[in-house]
Length: 104
Image 1 (spheres, rainbow, N blue to C red):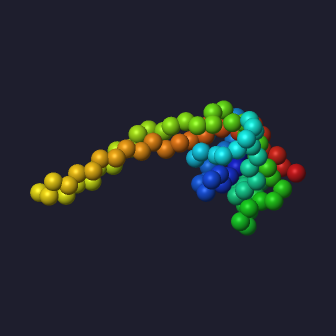
Image 2 (image 1 turned 135 degrees about the horizontal axis):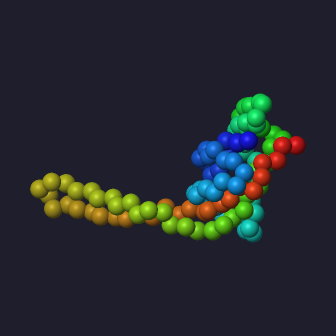
Image 3 (image 1 turned 90 degrees about the horizontal axis):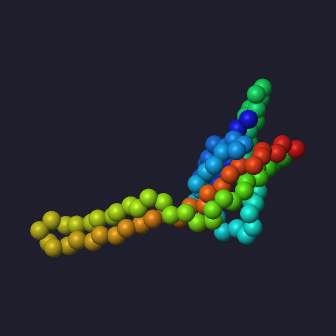
């Protein structure tokens, strides 16, 4: 069984036990419940939401609240003008583990 879920504006394919790095979530506690489920596929059927499925919830455990991603270097320059700008960015992520997919 797998599902397509929307977390912080992005779509992820999840299964029970999968570990994901999602954009940083501002939540308290160690568990979070996602209810914007776009698709659920079992062994014998596929349910597609219009736009979401109402009676499905996904429980996840927060493994780490803040992880920094790979550094991205942004370098702007204009030739023959002496203009150079160098900036770096590291995206912050939350590491979660999918505990179960509940269908009611």
